[in-house]
Length: 322
Ligand code: NDP
Image 1 (spheres, protein in one colour):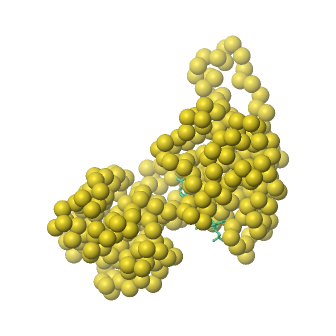
Image 2 (spheres, protein in one colour; image 1 turned 120 degrees about the vertical axis):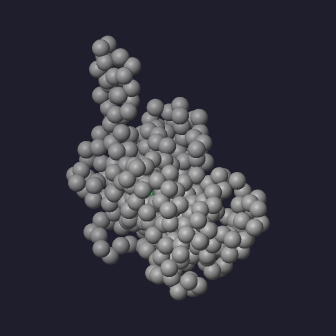
Image 3 (tube, protein in one colour; image 1 turned 135 degrees about the vertical axis):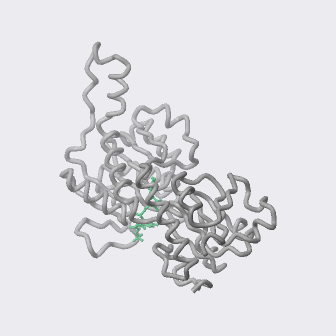
């Protein structure tokens, strides 16, 4: 009976998901308090965790009966999955169900950045249209060469959309894909030299930290546009601010930032930065589908069945419920 299995929800979770989780499991809400601060008799019962955000090795240590961490979101850079694997703890994420939503957002952000639609709307709402038409945009999407950093599930969905817009696609991953005809560049710098528009949708973590640096930005050139829907950490934020200020690149559209929800005042002050508060997957339907996958993974684990979306690091971990 899943109802007897205690699942800890340490912090804020999508309300639809929390409600559905409570219908299936015994839910313990941490309300954002430190996990190791929970009463010992609670900590010692917890067998699963459902969360969006960070989970540390100390949190794992504080939960001696923990078997599975079901992460709400495909990017699980906040959960040390290698450490979980060492401890025999399963980690799941929510791939695929958000792919199209995030790809849609990337194209919206690209268009808004290049054609300044948010600024044009502000012009209208401020009553300035009566005085003057909104100025012609210096930039256009037409003729752009688009590079994608991270041609995975979402990257490919972005690439298909970019193609439909009549633009070319090139990419950089650690290894080339065998199932696409897009030009592969073995380094990010090579890609940046070849294109004028770089869309970042690579995962966060140590390996990609600061990958989009001053040199990569300079390679995009003065008509360059950067879009980031991956992780804020992938872009060297101070280098980006400098590049936007001095015209090294033309503009940037960002859904993610280094220290969310903190956004540097320098970025807020730049008219050539189009900024969104990490909303790429944030429709009610998509968030609900992500939550459904979180719950289905937990239910499969505790029923001893095959998981729907284990992260690669923890595939093959023994399930004591099987
Ligand atoms: P995938 O794992 O399918 O794709 C990731 C891609 O990045 C792969 O093509 C991979 O190729 C490439 N990659 C990984 N590491 C590196 C590296 N060190 N250098 C270069 N390329 C690398 O993931 P998804 O497409 O499903 O999601 C991608 C990311 O998007 C998530 O990790 C998340 O951070 C972000 N995201 C953001 C959202 C938002 O709200 N803004 C919503 C959803 C996701 P290879 O292995 O060959 O290197």
